[in-house]
Structures are given as C-alpha cells and as structure tokens.
Image 1 (cartoon, rainbow, N blue to C red):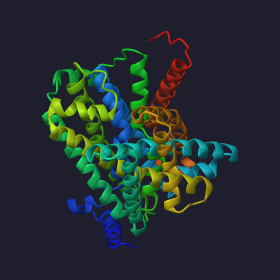
Image 2 (tube, rainbow, N blue to C red; image 1 turned 90 degrees about the vertical axis):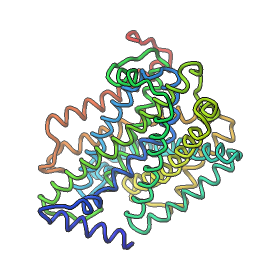
Image 3 (cartoon, rainbow, N blue to C red; image 1 turned 30 degrees about the vertical axis):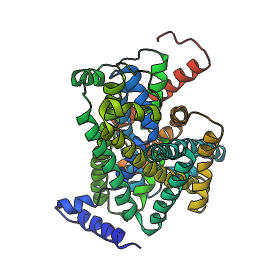
Amino acid sequence: MNSLTDKARSSIEDALASPTIGWKARLMFLGPAVIASVAYMDPGNYATNIQAGAGYGYKLLWVVLLANLIAMLFQALSARLGIVTGKNLAELSRDNFPRPVVWIMWVVSEIAAMATDLAEFLGGAIGLALLFDLPLFAGMIITAIITYGILLFEGRGYRPMELIIGAFVGIIGLCYLAEVLIAPIDWSATARGLVTPDMPDTAALAIAVGIIGATVMPHAIYLHSGLTQNRTQVTDIKHKRRLVRFSNIEVVLALAVAGMINMAMVMMAASAFHEGHSQVAEIETAYHTLTPLLGAAAAAMFLTSLICSGISSSVVGTMAGQMIMQGFLHFRVPVWVRRLVTMVPAFAVVALGVNPTQALIWSQVVLSISLPVPMIALVIFVSRRDIMGEFATSMVTRLLSILGASLVLVLNFVLLADFFGIAIPFL
C-alpha cells in the first residue's frame, strides 16, 4: 500500500476518534468529492456552456445553478451510501434488484460511460491539437497515453490519485478565475440570469438538457459511492455520523468550485461571443475567436483548462467504468482493456468526419437520458431503513431527491418530444 494512502487512512481514523480535529487532519477527508467534481467540469460542459453563453448570453445561468444544486444533493447521497453500507451503488443494485433489471441497468450505464468518455477524450485531444498545432488524431494518441499513465497510479492506493486529480481541478479553477478577470463580465446580467428562469426556445431547451447531462453525471453518482466505501474502516455509529458530516461538507465545497467554474464558462462565452459572435458553437471556433477578442493569454488559458479537464475527467470516467462493471457483473477487466474499449467511439467519430463539438453536445444529451437510472436507484436505497439504518434519508431530503429526479425525467421527455417533432404547447 502506498505510504500516502496509509498516512491518510491513519489520520482519518485518528481524527474520527479525537474530540477535536485540526485543519491538517481535516484535509485528509478531502478526496472523494474532489475526484467526483471533475465529472462536473469535463469537456462536455465546455461545449454546452459555450453554446449557452454565445447563443443566449447570461439567460441560462439559472440552469447551471439548478443543475449544480441537484448534483450536490445526489453526490452527497451517493457518498453517504458508500460510507454507511460499505458497498457502492452498482453492487447494491445487483444485490437488490431482479436480474433482468440489473442487466438493463448495466447496459444503460455502460452506454452512459462510453458517452462520457467520448466527451472527455475528445475534449482533451481537441485542446492538445489546438494548443500545439497538431492533427486531431495525434492529440487523441497523446491523450490516450497520458490518461493511461495516470491510471497506473490507481494501483498505489487512493491518495495519489486524489492528489493528482485535485491538482488538475486547481489548474482548471485558476484558469477560469483569470478568464473572468480578463473578460468584461456584465455582473448585473449575471445576477439576473442566476435567479430568473428563462427558456427562450426549444434550442435553448436542448442546451439546458445538455447542461444538466453534463453537470449531473450518471457515472459520478456510481463512482462517489465506491470512492467512500473502503476509504477507511468505520464500524462505530458515532464515527459514521462524523464521517458523513465531513463528506457532506466536502461535497458542498468541491461542487461549489465546479459550479463556479461552469458559471464562469457561460459568463466568459456570454461576454466574448454573445454580441456579434452568437453563432460560435464549437470549441475550435471559440479558441480562434478568443485570441483577437480577449488576447492570446485568455485563449491559451482556455485551452490549458480544456486539456486538464479532458485528461482528468477521462481518467475518472475510466475509474467509474471499472467500478460499474465490477459492481453489476462481479467482473473486472485490465485497465488498459477498459481504456482501449472506451476510446473506440471517439476514434469512430473522428474517422466518420463527425463534428467533434456536436458529438460532445449530443453525448451530454445521451448522459441526461441515462441519468434517471442511477438517480432512481440511489433514491430507493438511501430511503430504505433496512439498508441505511438511522442514516436513511428524512422525508424532506427524500422529497427533494424525488423532485430532482422528476425534473430530469420531465426535461428528457420534452427533449425527446421535440426531437421526434411532437408539439410542446408550453414553449
């Protein structure tokens, strides 16, 4: 076992048994939500957020805020499930649902995992290709090598991976802090966009569903329960309560950062593109347009954050795919096989000449359509006292989680109705 992991586990156990916890010990509790938060700032977010800001200015910021609040709730519940039961969501689904349901859930979850990796892998490759003036295929090869190299650290325990992913999150956050400082943001319009629900047309609806699909991620809900299930051995109820409380705090902090980064993406796109460049809808166009509008530094930071996002989220997506397969099927494949299989859709998209940014957008819609599966399963399990004991959700939390899952279902229904040409009278 890696010494960093041993140290973290020992510090967590000592802190849980201690009446007071110092700030250094508190840092050891950080990790699972940081890794999960990467799913909320992946390249799919870049694609949907650029389209939202360029096409509709600050009007869809409320969707980003709403999606982030839903994400906080479900990630907190997923983490609680792993801490309390010692099992992840996929394992509990396999143990409690009928076999046909388990197979359907696994197939849907695998499709979602591949859609996830399509967005993440393509995003990293696009960033590398643009920054270093390489063919997209070369960017894909480099991304594959880097992500596989990082995945090898998973065998050294959880702490090295948490630190590596945390470093990527820090770089993305710093890049977008600089972007917001460079771009002339309309702060009054930002405030209105955050608190005033507005859905201008069905195209905005498609982007809104894409934002939710890119923000509340199916694989992240599965993954978070797995990241907390074996992080430390906790049997004492008091210690579990304390661990759940720290987990909730970490979720709020990590996803607040992810939410602010997503809002910053929309704000930057609204500031730079909405007036005069509202048709900017592709990452490549956004990069080339940013240089004359905000300068080379802003464009370079945009690409740097995109590369970090693509690489880190692709690593996390592969970790989640492994956990989903192991949980549902009790079967695990070598990480290089998993990495190879999940890259196939991305290479197919490029080989067929499909627009990469449009592929990113529609991958997020696929994710949003798959999202109710883990959401509903999670709501069921965290509500059951025979599984969660005293940690079963309260009536208020249960209603909020049902409301969040229902909202996603309704938005998906509206999107599919529009896709098949069915009239939507309230739009």
